[in-house]
Length: 300
Image 1: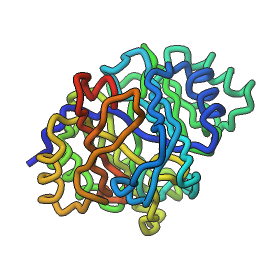
Image 2: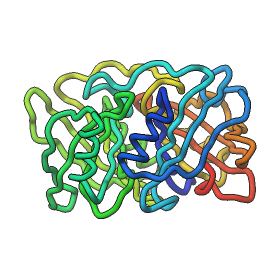
Image 3: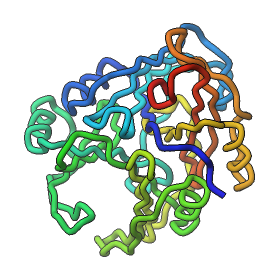
Image 4: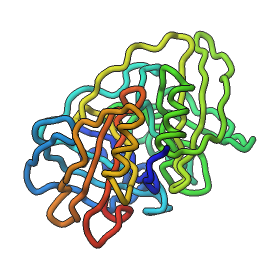
C-alpha cells in the first residue's frame, strides 16, 4: 500500500553560505526565490534526528512554479553545517540534482565566466523519447553535483539516487512512495563502470527519480548523513494526513527519526506536521502536512 501523499514538493540541499548559493541557483541558473522559511528561534529537532534546530532558507522554483518540484535551499545555523557532498560517483544515496533550461549554451557560458567548476565537457544524451539533447555536469558552490539539460522550459527535472539493490529501491519508490516506473535498463558499459538504472515519475508533479545501481565498481557501504550535512539530504512529499502516511511508512519496515510532529518554519508561515525517515540507501524522505488555511504547495 502506498502513501496517500499527493506529490513530491521539494528536494532539499544544504549549503554553507545561502547568499552565495542564491547567486548560483537564482542568478546563474535562473530560478526564482519565493518562500523564505526561516524559523524565528531554535526549536526541538527530534524530527530531523537532531537535538535543536535553526536555519535560514529559501524555496526556489522554475517556470512551473508550485506545479513543479521546488528546491529547498538551507543554511543551517543550529547545528552548524557539517559533512560533505558525495565524494565518488557511485556513493549510495542522493547523488545529483538535474535541471532543464531553455538556454543551455547561454547558461553554461555564464557559469564558466563565473568560475563554476565544470565536470567534463558537454555531451549529448537521449532525453527519453529518442531526442538527443546537450547536457553538462557542474558543481554548485558547495561541490554538489548539478546536471544541466537543454529543454523547453526552466525546471527542476529529477534527482539521481544511487542504490545498492536496484530492484529493492524500485519496489520501495513504486509500492510505498507511489511513483510510476517509466523505464528500467542495463546501461551500456563505460569501462570501468557497469550500471543498471530505472526511471520513476511522480504523477502529482511530474518530477522524476532516477535510480542507479553500480555493478562495477562495487558500491561502498551507505554513509550515514545528518540533517545539517552539506549537500542533498531530503526529498519531501506534501500530504493531507501525515499520521496516516506514517502508518504506511512504518508498515513497510521504515523507522522515522521521530513520530509525526509539529515544526515551525517561521512565525510568518503556517505550522507544519512533518515526518522524516531514511530511504533504502540512507537518503532522507519527508512528509509535510500544513496546518493552516494555506496549502502545502504554497507554504511547505
